[in-house]
Amino acid sequence: MVGQLVGFFIMLMVGYGCVRLRFYGKVALDGMCSLLLNVLIPVLVFSNAVDGTDRSHLAANWGVMLLTAVMYGLLILVFWTLARLLRLRGSRSHVFQASLIFGNAGFIGIPLIMALFPHEGAIYVALMSIVDQALLWTYGVWLCEPVREDGHGGGASGSAGEAAARGGIAGQDTKSKAAGKPAFGSRVLGLLRRFVNPAFIGVMIALALILLGARVPDIILKPLHTIGNMATPMSLIYLGGLFALTRWWKVLRRYELYVGLVAKMIAFPLAFYALLMAVVGFLPTWVPITHDMILVITVIAGLPTMTTIAMFTGRKDNMPEYAVGFVLVSTLFSLCSLALVSAIVF
Image (tube, rainbow, N blue to C red; front, side, top):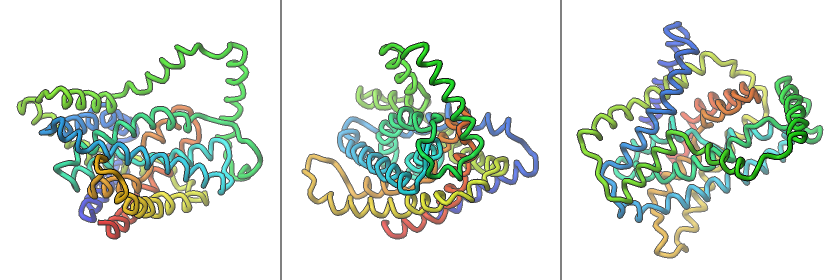
C-alpha cells in the first residue's frame, strides 16, 4: 500500500509541476478529464473484468455488491447526521455530504484495488461499480444541485456563491410552479439518462459478456489493457494539475473539512472493518463474503473525495471551489490515511 501511495504522490507532483511550469493549462486538463471519464477508466474496468472471468467468478463474488450497498447506506446515514450535528445548511450541507459519501474509486480506487488484488480485483471493481454508479448518478447528482438554506445555523459561514445559488433556485422554483411538474414519463426518462455514461455502460457490457460466456479475443484485449493502463498515471497527473490551478486553500477555513476527513478516511473505514469482522461469522454460508472482499471494501470506504463531485457542482456553479478543495485536500490526506488504515487492517 505504501509503495502504491508513494507512486501516486510522485505522479501528483509531476502534474503539479507541469502546470506550474506552464507546459499546459486548464484547457489541456479539461481534455484529460474528458478522456479519463469517457475512455480510459471505462476501458480499464471493461478489459480487466472480462479477462479470464466467467459466470463462476460472478456467482462467487456477488457478495461484494452487498458490502458496497451496506457501505453506502452507512455513509449516507453517518454524514447526513454529521452535517446536522455541525449545523450545516443548504448547499453547503449537501456538497459536504456528497464530498464524503462518494470516494474517488475511478481515479484512485480502481488502480489501487487492481494493484493489491491482481486476480480478483477486476471482478470486484466491476460489481462495485454497479452500485457505485447507480448511486452517484442519482443521489450524488441530487446532492450537488443548488438548494436554499433552511434556518440560520451556519449562515455566518455561507458564501456569496451560495446566496447567488439560492436566488437562482428561487427563480427556478417560481418558473417550475408556473409551468407545472413534468410528466412522470419525462422524469423516469431523465433518471435513466443519468445512467447513460461510459463507465456504467462499460460495466454492463462486461457483465453481459460474462453471463453469456463470450470471450474477448486476445488480439482485442491486449490493446484494451494497454489503453486502460494509462488511466492511473493520467488521472493522478490530472489531479496534480488541478491542485496547481484551483484556489483550493479557501476550504482550509472550513471547520467541517477537518472533522469530515478524519471521520470519513480514518474513523469510518476502521469502524466499518470492525463491524464486518464481527458480523461475517453469523452470515449464512450461501452469502459469498470473503476476507479479501472485506479488505477491498475497507479501502474503498476510506478513499478521498470523488473528482466527479467537483464537476457536478461546477456545472451548476454551486460552491465549486468548496468541492474542489475537498477533492484536493482529501487526496493529499489519503496518502497518510490510507497507509494508516491499511497498516491496521491488512
